[in-house]
Image 1 (cartoon, rainbow, N blue to C red):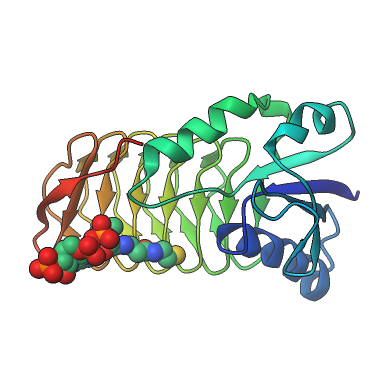
Image 2: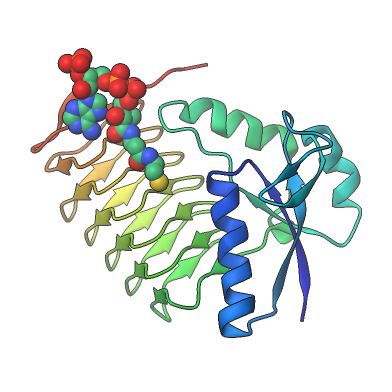
Length: 221
Ligand SMILES: CC(C)(COP(=O)(O)OP(=O)(O)OC[C@H]1O[C@@H](n2cnc3c(N)ncnc32)[C@H](O)[C@@H]1OP(=O)(O)O)[C@@H](O)C(=O)NCCC(=O)NCCS
């Protein structure tokens, strides 16, 4: 099977999604997905990482009529509310999202990946974990067993989220951050780079350090 994916985003997370698809194809002969191009409001008519930008987000309605699947790769750390706002405006049904897993990732057979999830190389999703819609799990990120993650979350490279953790929607566990077991991260929350989360993080808050402490609220626009 060869299903065409349009990546909504730029060269950052979007480039990672494209690289994941290409590596699965080229090194592992997994031809399920193929990159059709990008959607990006600021790069119309240009290319991103060699892929054609097919248009801006205003083209989504038209493209939904065609035989494409989508990956939502816009995730601005600290601007979590804006990331969600752009997502909601497009109104893409679940059935139109791809789910992309790199061939070197481990996903337990009873873990759930909702539509639109990316699991990049050498990542681990433990037994009975649940990863919400369009969440991005980047390379070498580990998510422990029985952990529940909401929609549109982002796990940066090398982050470790332990077991029985609960994470709301549109939240971040950033570069090398670690979350101890059974902790709760709210909606629009951020565990800063290299932080050790020993306590719960409320909605809209960024915490940093080891043990992590409140730094500031995220931007609301
Ligand atoms: C937490 C974070 C979002 C804050 O970013 P920001 O809003 O731009 O904050 P600033 O860089 O202005 O930093 C504000 C202060 O917090 C400190 N700070 C920022 N991040 C910190 C961290 N992770 N640990 C400790 N201190 C931190 C800064 O040193 C600065 O301190 P100062 O005021 O004494 O100089 C950012 O530092 C971070 O961790 N980003 C994650 C990066 C990442 O994962 N990228 C994705 C790769 S896949």
